[in-house]
Length: 395
Image (cartoon, rainbow, N blue to C red; front, side, top):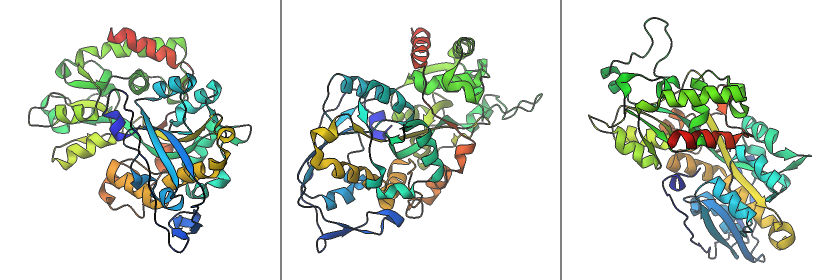
């Protein structure tokens, strides 16, 4: 779920080669547990190439610079995928990579597909500094028979973004005057058909992103959303159709939402989004709310896995692969992620280093207590049903 990959439709294939990095007396500073202040030995004797299958935008050295400094003679090549479905299909077809960047909810499917192999968290010292809530969350779904298949590296929210001034102008009260129920900070805003909102809503063109919110709006309990019964799927499909008259368009790029929601006469007044759209519009001076729905924001977590067969194929780079993953969990890298991409870092030490405190706080990245009040994205065994419903709806 990278910022640039979300804004890029189509497969991008580029290769970035890392050159020599600088060492200090045979050592470099900045990577290790206890806040990334430890000293790790320079590994200039290690040579070879690591291939990272990645979201576009995550190749920047700001996110893995400590690896480059520690392993100056290891080249890093990046190939990019648009979404996880494409990545899984390519790996199943034999695409060669060493490290890949899936999201937590997909990992069980990838394990079953046999495209990733266990990794060794003892080779990732910054593992100790991951927020306990995030660590517990990912371990519940990605540790099989005591073996770890996934290390978190970035997280964020999917929720509603709306223009409160325009909702008020259109006569949509913040709370229902009869029942007192929330009208704005509620997923029903996107799916309960209101004539006042005809052609004023945008939804992402993605079953995975939209169906969960639709289910919540239809009254499906949070604990059932990711494994709905047939009856609950029918309710969700009906709710999706109910809201269709309000939908102006289905967006593919976060930039689309920004363009449609800005201005004194915006094309849309609400959409389902990630955090970057909210911050961009706020920074441009527009009155928008990155909603905290009464039901909770949807929370996603992405990270790294080792591609199946890598250890046998290239044992000399086994530790280096883990060092690359570890570098993402360095507090400075996590702070850069927060400040520049407006995503959260799993590192509990990153918030103290981040400079954009206002944005970090607004998006809730200074703490993971919100896990208790969020809808944590989980593995969806009937995702094919979601896609079928969405395809029929979009036809």
